[in-house]
Length: 431
Length: 86
Image: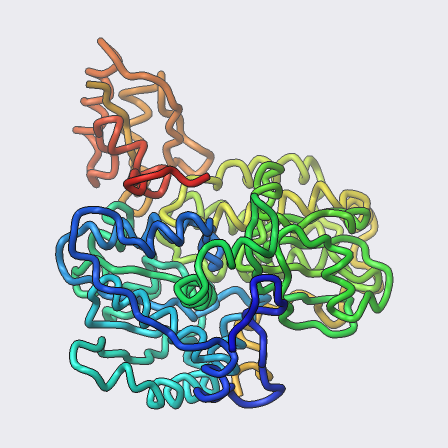
């Protein structure tokens, strides 16, 4: 027995309400896993072609085509390493912790497939140091896999990385795994050229590997049977804010915002706006519920889902205070390596805090907008770009609220409990 | 062979010599860090660009062949062998 092409959900099928889905239940749900042969010839590996035909793109935020990444690592000539990026430094995201704690075998399937294809002997799972529960579940699931007892199987370790927004940035993550600080480095060289221990390294997000495992089992046609032609398959979305059941849901590509809200139990109160893509994303006004969550179509409008993040901003929250607080947090998360990021994010956060308190409002909007432009594409990583998008789209979508604060100072809701968290991990998911 | 300027933002510590030597293509932001304008570098301008790169005290500014620079900007210059993604 296994999942049919049109069956839904896929990733979250069989997920227990507590604890991890065991190996026997996982295998009876998804069927047997046949590992691919290692790529030896110069012609493209059939599974890489299948992943390309599936149109699979990374679910960690950048949306890079997975087949291209695998191709690049496979073409390097020496034995590659694999890093599973589950550090999830974005406070609004919890899908990777959900996968590792509830459905670890789904991710391990993808890891075994990728390691077998690349002939990799070394795999590192990187999880946030606070995620002790998911790390336990993952280690236990790994101990159940007979594939890892066989000759030639990769050595797999689960590594704890420090909590922090930049721990998930792939260059910073590689630095951390080598014993260094969570700071990005200048690229090139890219991880596919020189990564872990100087070896070519495949860095993929947990959900991406889970999807690789499913495509290896069922093929590209099965993958494309759900979703749209421009955003095939399904993806996990962490929904936060004014919904009855905040948390992770699975949706097919092209699902509308309205349907997503329905899947999360509906709105608890009117909203003043929607944040797509988390702290590196964009704010939209409240009249966008017919918007289709199709990554390709969104990108044509300059919008990104990031690691699958949708936040519904309730009417009762103060969006100005919350945007200012996240801007300050992002400034503190900066590695403080690149001048424009060091100075620009500081200037933006200072100005937003002043504005929130009703101070110094002369041409403040123009200045913040100029700084947002000035930091974009001028760092070694995309942290400043994301922060600029988050702040400048907030100014566009909530101009009346910002102007009201500039004129009258703090509002009654400024001190209310925050909708936008600045702690990396919700204790519920860490346990 | 066309060449292009590339800045390593981690290495750059805002000495600002580059903007003096190549004001046609480099200006300084309000914190003194260089902003590079796009555009072809040829003839005399290329000579000035080379001098600007050579003068950078932290070796943050470099002249690179266009193809390499373009590949670096787009994340990777690779395309999968075989068919292009549809």
